[in-house]
Image (cartoon, rainbow, N blue to C red; front, top):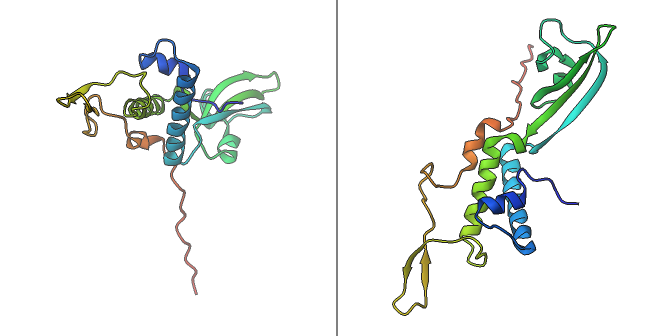
Length: 185
C-alpha cells in the first residue's frame, strides 16, 4: 500500500509539463513527493494527515455555536492539535452526534502543497538524469561537449524561486513549556 500524498503524482507530472508520464517517471515523482512531505513533517513537528473523530450523545458547551470546536470541550482536553467541526446532529434528548477533524489537513493546506510542488520541481529540474522536464540552457562549450543549465532564481522569496520551509512556520507545532514552580521554604 502506498503512503498518502498531499498531491497526486500524475497531477503533479501534468503541472510539470509531462503529459503522459511513464511508470518510472511517476515513481520518481512519488518518491520526491514523499521526501518533501518528510521534510515538512520534520519541520512542523506534526503529521500532514489528520484524522476524524466521531462521538455520539455528547453535550456541547452552551456558550458556543455547534460549528465551533470550542463547543466540544472534551475534544481540546483529549487532542493537542487543530480541531475543526465537520458535522453535527442534534438529538431529541439535547445531546449531539458530532464529527471532528483533528490535526493538519495537508492536502487542503495551500502552503504545504505549494512547498511540496516547489521542492519536487526544483529537485527534478536540477537532476540531469530526469530529462522529462525541459531545462533552460545558459551556455554551450565551443565544441558542444559541455552544457550549462539555468538553476532558476536563487534569491529567497523572489518570483520563481522555490518555496522554503520557513513559509510554513505558522503551521508549526510549538513545544509546550511550563514555568518551573517555586517552592517556599
